Image 1 (cartoon, one colour):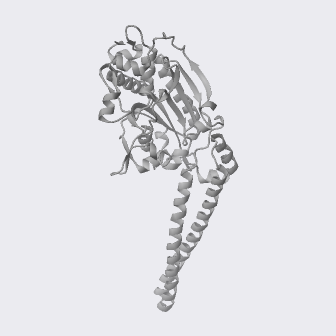
Image 2: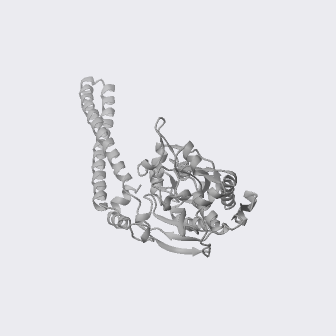
Image 3: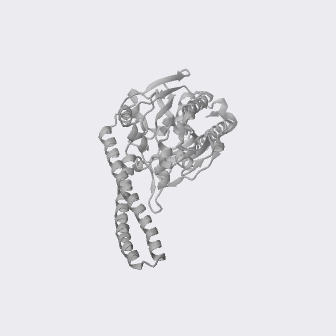
Length: 424
């Protein structure tokens, strides 16, 4: 979340920046935060004054008792009782104001980076880079949802039988391709210096609030109500929360972690070509890279992470494009996001397979994730994450783009992992 200091000191800049997101009522909401924060500060000041007076009187009572002036001491005690009552009332008022202020702050998205264009949706995103020739497929080319039936490698009917729509069953070479991609992505990441993490698949409420999935995406997460735990929508949540409530030393920064997890999302949506087959699922596999950096290093780290994701797509021989998302198309936590999209030849459309984001200090402020600068002053760190990569649409593009009369060709880089070079 945005820091109160920035909101107070840079009100106009914050409101102007939120305008890039087409965020409604930014001005009135920011002013409400400032007004509520001032009220909170006033109550805190009054309570601090009462507590200070109480401490002074307590010392006075001690001196009076030592000198045998019990009557005078009792009179002062009655005054401290009244002060204690006032402090209790002010503390309750302060707690209510802090809770209200916190909820307001949760409702304000991150301010976009200066590079981010203004806009409302995907039509306002900017293509930064394109790589690779689009495959020239025959008219008879089939979309992946037909190919998986033809070669009996992924079964949606079985998944629907045992779980429901959006939970596919991978079989035979389909399962082996899935495992091959996971291992390939993990090996590539560790070779680049990322430390592999195997995190829990459920998180508590504090973790959800720490990385910003709560309260923003509460309805999109599977909730284990009996234990008040949430199935993770991405490995970003548990891996970033490893560092919640920590002050990292210089020797611990930067952190560069990678993790494979299944991901769970309730947002699969309605049936149609844009969400058909593997295009959108309730459960899917993903390898995630997460970095924590000092503020002056995070922009460079974002470029590094994008270049790494692009290298994976090139090794897989997939045509792709890199998009800079506009303010209205970014997640609420991000200050800047680049999407990588691959071309699915039979669908003849681009599919998003990775989002790489710099969150600035937005998540770190929620999590109290900090470091000490050269002057010994505590500062917020920056968090970044990226899909490297999400498997379903990668598989969809691989199946569609590499279909031949003999079967589906496996990219050379994956053959050592699959132990086969064709699905036929």
